[in-house]
Image (cartoon, rainbow, N blue to C red; front, side):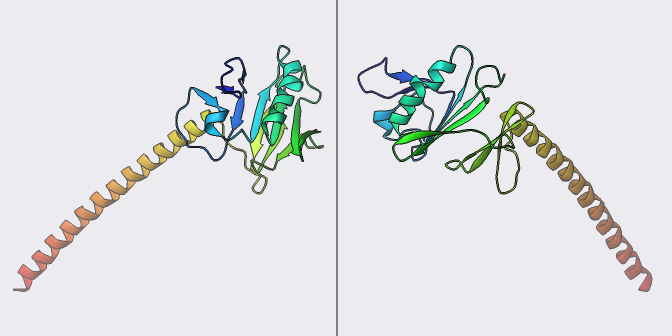
Length: 184
């Protein structure tokens, strides 16, 4: 999504790979106009490549700092252009301070309350309290499908048990009626 940051200047825009904004209405947008939303992104992620790394480290970093972004993360999935391949910039007073991953290839996002961790060259987001990894959209879809399959199977078992219980009740009523008839 294009993020426009200067009203009346259509060339004053940038297209972050991922950005997070809090405090704005959730609805479909074709563009994000900073002067209309009145809320800058709090976190931005850029996936770096040979063609973008200089801009990611230079122009975009300065622009995001000026916008008031709290955290800026760079990730080079191929590990060819950034050393290390995961880097973070965190706002300390008015400017960004660069941080590198710790010995576990991990950076903490205070704003998102998540850990960013490289696992086998892949960027993962984890809940630091539980160490559970946030699922990718594909994994979320698969988990939903599996949950639906389990729910459908449970419903089928419940329907079958209800049918057996109903049959048993009918048989019990018939036996009671037969017993009453025999006693009379």
